[in-house]
Length: 195
Image (cartoon, rainbow, N blue to C red):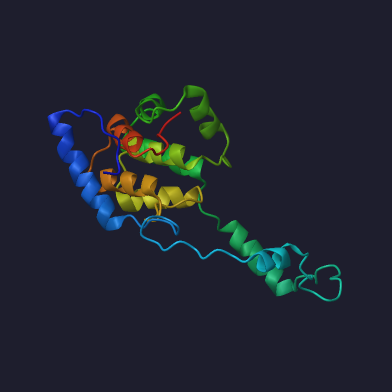
């Protein structure tokens, strides 16, 4: 079994059996894991050759970058004017749409009040993946809405990370309890959600 052995309540065992089956189906382990063949060992000559300093890509030194043409400057300016809302703006909008208070949201996400104050007061705030996912779970977002919120922070739920697959499983099954998700993450030796 992949997860640690400790006593679960009888009703919880069904979740973990179902979660284990889900991980077997959807989790893609990284190379070098049990399902992948080990990489062949390199010879000493190849290692020594790779340690030599590689030649630079450009034979001649590269001068200052060429200035952008005027049409490219205009296109860039237009793109910058059409930026999407930031992560913190999206979180505050979703809290209002859900009819929640800020305190209810950060308590449900297990985030400290001071940490949430940084999110509220800094429009360019960049969260950690665990914080972004905790807020998505606290807001009870669907999988598509969660992916959209995570994209605003520069993240996504990937099938190549066990943490992401476990979180995805609970979101797909409509289980939005951070404690339950953290128990599963702990059982599989993954980082926990919240502060």
